[in-house]
Length: 405
Image (cartoon, rainbow, N blue to C red):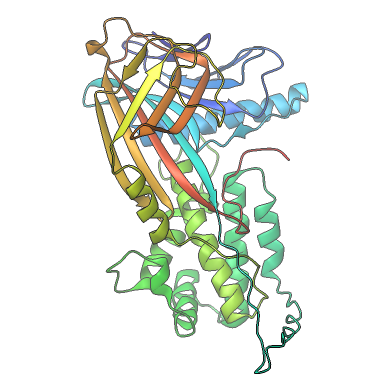
């Protein structure tokens, strides 16, 4: 059986499982087995990992969505019954899923690392005599009702709630510049309102290259695929299959908040925030150049905590294993570059309990990640590490949810 820490994750003959990180170590051990379901959710005292598992052989996407929902239900009950309020910490950015792909059991480690960057500059205007011309007074702030939803979204501790609030804010913005007509269907109004916005600003910046109908794309990817599934999904048994998984919602949120800010600034003249930004294309070029000398990935049982000064995969000198296959995917979404390491475990004579997974660009350490409790992979065919480096522009909105404070 495969385990993370002291908890069973799944494996051959046992089924699938998903492990997430909690905002704090569990104050006590707990096993949640909902009536009429084939799921179990388990947490152990002192460990910051929580596991959802099922004997059903689910696809990766279904496992992630349903496993997270079961974990949230368990935490809901603990909040009510035990007065213990725990969060799932960055569920889209840090998790392990064990699923079946093509008849084989795959343990996939997923990690998203933020890279904070920014551009700062001062503009000095001088007259013909060389004297500094004082800048004009900044425009007075303009308040619009949609800003209330924006603030609630940015202050949320839950990704799904953050998206819901931001979408309500978008509807409020659009309603300000293009009011909904009597008896007009919501989707028809959205298409008309976005077309109105498209006449005032270039929407092609928010869609993939080559897209010929930005309005249809935005309404289709945000309203049809995410908004309707989140707002209309009912918490009933069994799980509604249309509920999006957290990775889909996280990507949609990042795209929606860019659109939201531009509409507020350009169409409603809301005063823009300060600060420069690194462009997505510039970020991609920088990351592509960084791996030009070769990308390698490793794993080890060294339990050393990760720190920014790490230069070695194993600071304690433990055995280091190379991933057999490493694939650099380059840009996988605006402001994100990804890479994947794959290791057939049958090729490893003695599979260690994995505590660290690292990557190097040339000889330089690029990422160093820790699985504190350790990942034990008996009954698993492949280890896969899917890593993403996300651009975090200073002074721009928050896009990571699931942490207190």
